[in-house]
Length: 492
Ligand SMILES: Nc1nc2c(c(=O)[nH]1)N[C@H]1C(S)=C(S)[C@@H](COP(=O)(O)O)O[C@H]1N2
Ligand SMILES: [Mo]
Image (cartoon, rainbow, N blue to C red; front, side):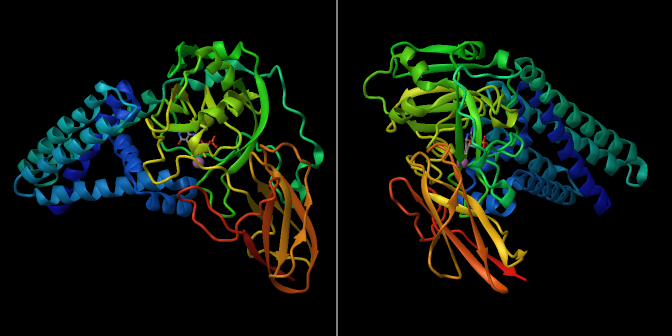
């Protein structure tokens, strides 16, 4: 057998195996697809330092990079197995079974896959072994180009099965469910945002982030697809009256709207993972009051449909948290948790903001740990007082009269002051945007008139408790980065 043919036998067999598993996965639950299950398990097992590197280096493209990397490794392994099997099909058969067992292990490790899920990787093992041996036999029997038909048949079948799996796996029509909900209005709307709340014309972010531009952090490779009619939320644990809520039960309640800035603990100094929206929902207090919380509970442990979990301090959540169904007047976008998520002003997202939430367990910190806690992040982490320069951009060229603008945040304390200094000189106070709420960011600006040449600006915020943000550069793990953001630019 020619080396090219041998490698092709391996690659085609693995392609057929993955496609068949993906198709069965689409029926029993797409997270059971061996390819996605291995990817998701890889994400869950990735050491924090590597995950942080991936996020900083690739930003939100980290998943594309992961899937591409996996595909490259799998193709290389398959080609190598094919080459090793030029005389007898045994090595390739062993590799096919080994890859299949990896898929089984990955699927069994998924928190969001039921027992039936194993059918998908098991199908992959059988199809992979069968396709490999069949192609191998044809290639051995007809060493010249006579096996082209079989090769094309397997390639075609794999492509059709993969595409069908993809389409069928995404068959849940979230869009029509979202559209049927229409506009979401609160009984108690948020106060209008004053015009002087941002300095967008000077380069600060707009005060409200559009749903499209809102930052996004998901552990899972695929966004859960849940129709509002099929969604339910189980409220249980240390309560006297456990119950299940449906979407309409929530929508019929007195909805409140609140302007909230969400922040990610993994934000580097100067990083982009912060945004603000008007969230609409029902206070968690209303729901938990009906559930009648028992004495001794100190954690609200929330679980999403895709197996993400977060643990929040119960007292704080009772005071501030909401089960949100609306974002900037619309139903939640699918990527931001449709049909329902938690929003707790003043807590980092990883300990509070569970999207696609389906389970609220009233429990203790001693008993349950949220997703990120065993991965090296702090179980309790107050948001750190921080600020960021948005204009000028690093390395920009500006005229001598230039405006420095940015944002600062210290939820739930609120921002009292932002200062900047140029080239290590004296600190100068900046002009602040309107004080919308202590649960939101605050914009700032300062006009400068600088000589030609290169300059460095630094900023630091002081919150309403009088605390000025730390200068020491600390990485995001385990409870949020610190350090003053600094930008260098050139005046021409
Ligand atoms: N189901 C689920 N919910 C989640 C996450 C997740 O990965 N999966 N990430 C959390 C983190 S770390 C943050 S910062 C916020 C981000 O919310 P956003 O994507 O709507 O901005 O969601 C939280 N809720
Ligand atoms: Mo986060």
